[in-house]
Amino acid sequence: MFLIERLPNEGKQLNTTLPLANQKSALKQDISNKIGEELKSMWIPPCCKPNTTNIGDYCYSDKTPTSSVTCLTDEQIIEKLLKIKEISQTNIIQPAATEPAQNIEQEVVVHKPETRPENKKSLKELKELAIVLRQKLDSLESEKNVMEVEFSQVQKSCERADADLKNVQNILSSIGITDIEADNVSDGLIERVQRNISSLHRQSEELTSRNLSLMVEIDKIASTMDLLEPERSRCRKILGNLKENAKALKDEYEKKEVLANQLKENYGKLRGGNKRSIYTKRILEIISNVDKQNMEIKKILDDTRQLQKEINTLEGQLDRCFSIADETLFRDAKKDDQAKKAYKLLALLHSECNTIVSLVNDTGTLARDIVDLEENIKTETAKRTEDTLRKIQADLTKIQEEN
Image (cartoon, rainbow, N blue to C red; front, side, top):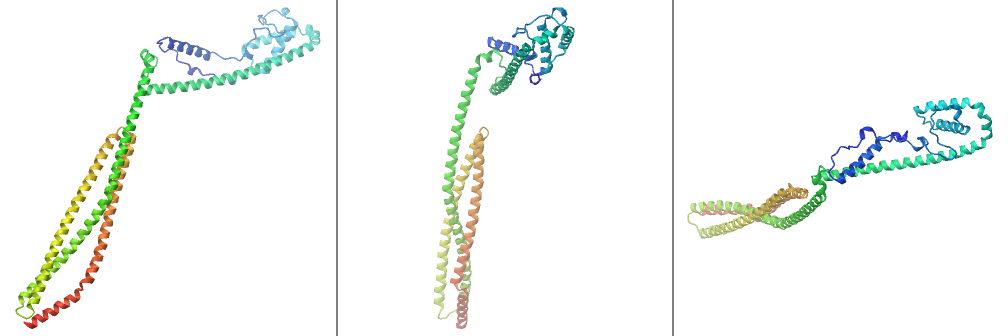
């Protein structure tokens, strides 16, 4: 029953109606038809088949169970009894074989009185025959086991062959071959496969070379960015310092200009006095200092403009490099997965560079604020505004007293 269950179903029949193209396909079709016919037929183990050969003392007879009772010999009756016993032990009795067995039992019952003395005489022969039959049964069981192993091996090989056939069909469908039985395909199949393989090799070489060139270009852009970044940060720091210095000088200039105007007004109000020349000299010195400071402020502003131009040019070069790299990688990313990865890395690099630039700007502004505060502290401590105001107030009182 185990072997019968392992047989293929009727729904899994082979397709034997494919059109034949050449001798090769015809041979394949014949083989498949033969295998299909063998698989369709019921497989019966050798031990269950009717014996048609002479084995030992057993002689095969073509007589039907309905033959006359007087034609049976003692040996034939004993052999049939043993056969019935053997069939009852194996439990593989088919429905068609029940009637002959009953007929044989009837025949045995009819001839029982006649064969009793012969059975007593041939007990030793029956034992020997039972041993021989047991040996034959063991050999048949071993043969059955071997056949089962071979059958399982054949099933496994068929499964492997089906898997290989599916793989070949998938490969052929991937290269554009769908009808294997066609004349053109069977003739030029190897050439088409070789052409497709060579084209795939060429495409892979082109993609690898393009990937290498893109990686080299990315490395160059990254190196140029690494070289330009410290210079940009240094220029920004210098520019911030110059702007802060210019702002401080401008404030100081405005304060001094206001002071100069006040002094001019006071000088106009004053008339005469012995110390008028001294005050005029001091006023002229202040004006000259203001002019010098104006010149320095103009120079600082020119330097800041020049640095701003350089920074703008560097930023323009960097943006152009990024845009060129972005365009090239975006074009290649539509066709190549490696280019997609490179494009993502470039975008990440661009964002990281922007964050670094923003951080550098923030640090520059903080450093400038710190420097400004330190300079303001120094200037306030060095100016001694309270002392100067006191001196100016004393001078004004003296001038008013002289007038």
